[in-house]
Amino acid sequence: MNETGLNIIPLLLFIVIIGTIVLFSARAIGPWMSQHISWKRNILCAGVYLAILIMLVPISYLLPRQGFMQPGGDKSQTVLYSPTDVVDNFSSVENPDQVKGVYKNNSQTFKLDTNSLAFDGSVNQGNYQILIKRKDVDDGEIEVSSYTSEQIIGDINFTKNILPPSISLQSGTLSIKAPSRQNLEFKQFMADFTVDQFKHLNQNLLDNYSGDPNWRIIYLRVPQSVKIHHNLNEYNVHTL
Amino acid sequence: MSLQEVSLRSITFKQYVYKLKGYSNLLYGLIITQIMGIIFSMGGVRSSGFGFDELTIMVKGYTADLVIVFSFFWIAIIGSTIANKSYKNMEFSLVANRLSSNLSNVCFLLTCSIFAGITASLSGVLLRVIGYFTFERTQTFFEGFFIAPINLFFGMFVTILCLILLSAIGYLGGILVELNKSFIIIIPVLVIGFLRVYAEYLVGIYKYFSESPLPLFTLKILILAIILFGISVLLSSRMEVRK
Image (cartoon, rainbow over all chains, first blue to last red; front, top):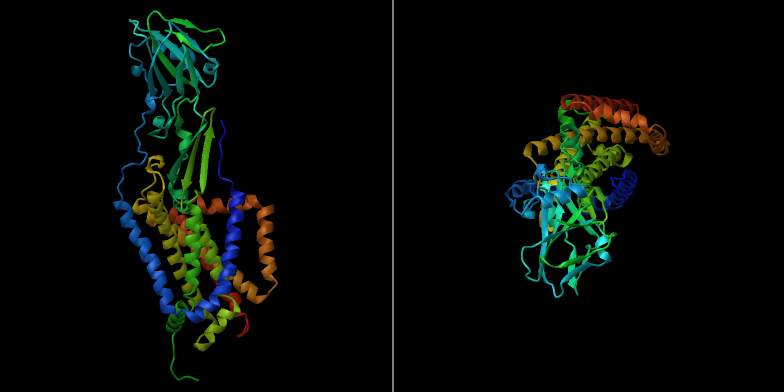
């Protein structure tokens, strides 16, 4: 895990360069402007600029507030599990959706054309815990669901933005492919430093991150009599 | 010699109005600077993030900080500009003395500070409105998007105070340069040298102002600005008429 912060030196350099450009352009354009543009027009332009900015204040309050990332995450729902706890929690409930602090982000059903199930090497990639539960019937279908831990920044739950792995079944072999590296970029409007230095309104929302991205659950419901083949290297495969 | 007596106040006011008209083209510089600040701010002025195996989370922060800092530069430049010879020569078409000239300059700088402070703080609203229509709202935090009116006025007030102080610094710099051209080199060298060698003192100065409650902050800024303007007036009165 790494954090990046604001680098002040390039910003200062950038500001100085811009300031110099503005200074020299003002010196160059200024005399021409004072000769060709009347003071009335100057004041009018400044007035229009100010009026536009003032008008934007009521307009901004009238903008619909739907669609934003609104607070709604309940941190008490965020439970950090160890792999052992994960197995215990999922085995203790009949319906895995009842487990606290997890979110189902994908669900698929595959027809099993053999009476055995194996996993390819991809199951050891990523942070997957594979939980297998046998059904009471032999219906020849494997139900695969993937779960992720709740991801909350501040009060905002963004678990739904987490991509599920792609899962496929071929000739009785289940393949789980982690999604390609996902970059989530959020935007936060903050108070200006002139306000923040007194009111301390700005907070780094990432300081309030809660969740554990280091585990994902693949929950399989397999027919009762299906044979499961997995070797000891697949330490993350558990039968419930 | 005129038989009509004129008061300092009336002559200062006339000069102030004259300068408002005469220097009004300087406002274009502010508008252009602020628009540039807004454009650059659209890329985000702060960012923080972290990454794991399959996931990188980044939060980009948007504020009008850059617009405010650009406005600080503008007012400092304006402060030094109106103290220079070419601008002073404009005054000789009016009945004036050194004091009225300086007072009208101070009034002009205060007006500029108020205008720049209001527009710089309001540019934060413009930034949000642009963001509303250009950013994916599902990836934008609601928190902080709408500025409370009280915070908007608060920001304007503090920005105006900072601008007044910087205009006083700029004006003093301009007067010093008029007194002796060698200050064109000495001032930047002093500033850069101070920044490099005594950076911790600068942090101390910053804390001296920023860690005070608002009334004390206001008092500190105003007293310092009055002192700086006062020094400028005193130094300026020692100049020859056409200098």
